[in-house]
Each structure stands twice: as structure tokens, then as C-alpha cells.
Image (cartoon, rainbow, N blue to C red; front, side, top):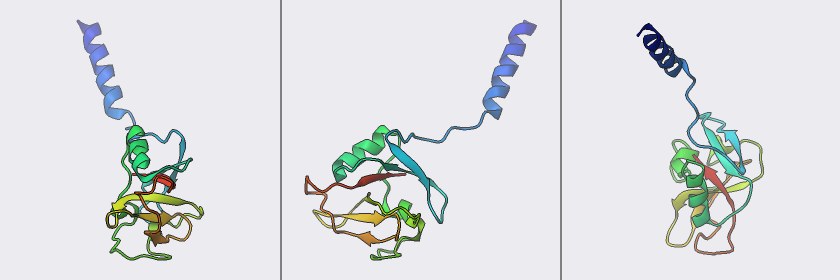
Length: 133
């Protein structure tokens, strides 16, 4: 009986003091930290369509990041510097989960924090990296 009690106590203490794991993975991508909010994001290493980006993030146990998740306190501004949180020094573009109208989505540059709606999510040839939250 004492042996069973000891095993239970050890098992419970390991569970209590174990470091929690970060939700999601980033297989086939690179994790990076937001410049302002310090949240860990995942940027896919390959470009894909907007629709494929949703599926890719889900496969990582994450979600395609919304503009609000990418750019805290974003008020709909576009252009350079509109998303200071994404100014991390990498000249890469990524999809957000936010559509803008029926055929385009907001895109973010990871160097300038530039926000555009240039790429069409309805265009099968439009390919950017996924930005997962």
C-alpha cells in the first residue's frame, strides 16, 4: 500500500511541476516572436494559397492568425508600419485570416509591418506563407 501511495505522489508531483508545452508545432516552418507582444508565431517555409494556409496552420495545431492577433490594436490601417508587431526584420509576406471583400485578404510584411490587400485569396496562383497564431 505504501508503495502505491508513493508512486501516486511521485506521479502527481511530476504533473504539477512539469513545464507546460507550447500549444501547436511549426513543422515545415519557422517560429518567430512578435516585436511588440512577444507571442510566438509560426511562419510556413513554403508559399501556399490562402485556403491552404488555413489547413496548414490547423495541421500544426494552430490557426491562421487574424489581423488582430498579428497586429494588436490594429484599427484597419494599411501601408508601411501599420503593423509594428510584425516588424521583425524578415522581408517575407504572409496571409492573415481576414478577408477584405469577396476576393482579397489582408497580407502582412515581416520587415516593414506593411499591410496590404494586394493578393487575391480567390486566385489559385496567389501564394504567400501562412502566419499561424
